[in-house]
Length: 283
Image (cartoon, rainbow, N blue to C red; front, top):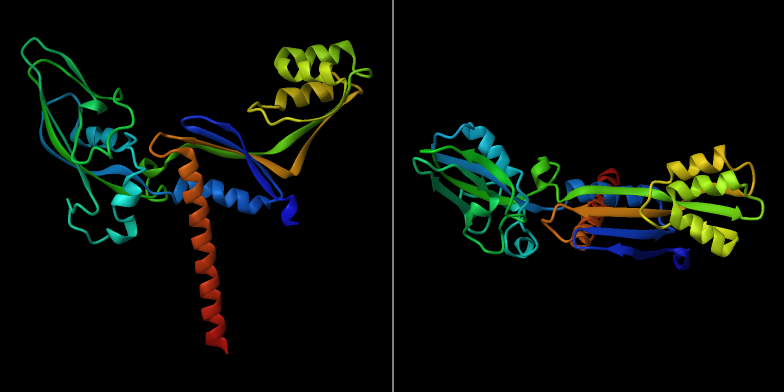
């Protein structure tokens, strides 16, 4: 069974990772996917002290916008305590919190957009991932002065601590085809939506094609069922998966995946420990 299990990277970019998984059960793959959202800690602003604000936005709106700015968190995983260790920590504790400051004042004839890059951080390793995220547009003679505190947190607490924008899996589509039996209408339908797949069909002429590209195959399924009376069949292999993880930029996608797997392992070990404790209590 172990020989049939495999994981291989089919696409890797700065914030995207796609993996082909074979031989692992769906509940396990789905557990890792869900843990990517809920159990991988990243930094996010959790509390904001506003000292001066006469801009058009209320303090609460600015605080919410600050909280939703992704912060670089890779080094933070090693430098700062985990959320469960900081429950009783004092605000500003250097083992748990990173401090951000923002102090801007516009002149009599000045208008200015305040961006995420204007935030000053106490730790260069924890800063906004993107410097061009707008916070508030300031009119002439306006002031904004605040201090914010960021800490590690989990997505199960709030969406601001979710390190992924997308974490999804699907069965691997499998296309069986014979070009000699396919009608012109059939191949033209596939060419319109999936030119690369149509090209492979023409080159191979007959065979089986496992579609590992990042494409939505619903249109291909429509072509095969509605336009191809024979010569083509599309199925989905429920023993193979394509897992896609797209990061917000707070963590590299490979780090998110490894942290999610570790979280699932910890939960399983905790469950086993509780079961053993129950059995000891019954004996």
